Length: 199
Length: 199
Image (cartoon, rainbow over all chains, first blue to last red; front, side):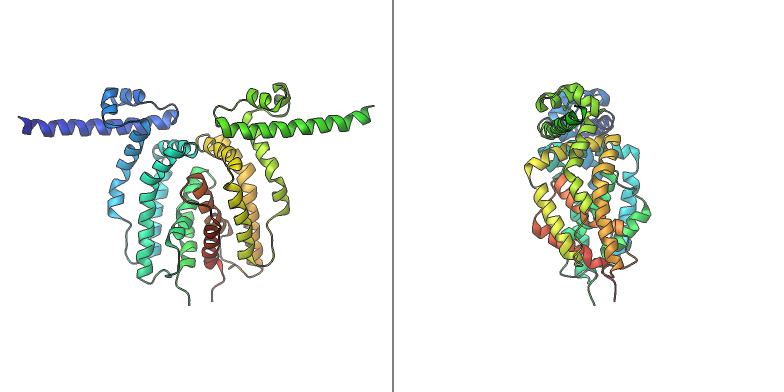
């Protein structure tokens, strides 16, 4: 009996977990981080709030897991490495631009980023859990290109990645420009131009 | 009599304006943008709230003028042009890093940036009034370097400036890294390396 019950219970838990994540991401986009509550998430997800408290200590923890659940796949695969650094970066960043331009993605991510700008602990968790793993994939890809001789050995890979990703993030967060494929292509070309081995 | 009264009244106005700006910047750092009120600013500045409403329609308008008053000088002078682009950019960005690392500067600017991430109209005004004029100084300096042959003619000056300023802003806003002079120097060198004319 115990053996048969376990998969059902685990499927039920997984269904609740998904419902809670969807509710948290939708709600934070609708009401903002400050007005988001565990009660609100529970009600939207159709679960008791004790179910949420059993798994997470705070609304920030729920949200961070909800976001992380969406990026885990990407994280495991790493960036493509076809041997053509420019093509690989353009393909990933064009897809990321399409994602960031999607209103359904925008609202929750923006609410979390905004809350993080004012709340240092949330910001540090947000960066460590969400931004840093993604950034590290790019750093790894630049290092692989350094080993392949496509990028100069004396380049600071971390700062190179910031030259690539920060203009992208800032255009989006501060609405200082459009995230078009043309922008992505020019950015990649202009950053890589400085990274190539000299002579 | 009217001729004598005018300078006194204008000095008094200027004193009130300064007191209102100081109060607005201090308070937004203390309580955040959401809890900032015209009443609170008036009380801290020692003026009636009608004085504030006579000059500004909203707390956002007061804050933006308060920030702009602090950067006007810089805006008028433009970036230094000694003929050495790397040295000029390092000197300006090192000074800017020192300023951004000052807690008295941090709190109000961060509160406004955070509020802007969630409030599109505030964000667009913030960008147009505060970020864009500064960005344009850098674009002008890169264009001057293009004319002087220090930077390749086919470089997109705007994106070059974003490669320089966005990593700086993001480290500060998201707390993803320190704003040290070493960071600034490496960033400038690495960006300029890609901008130089080829061959």
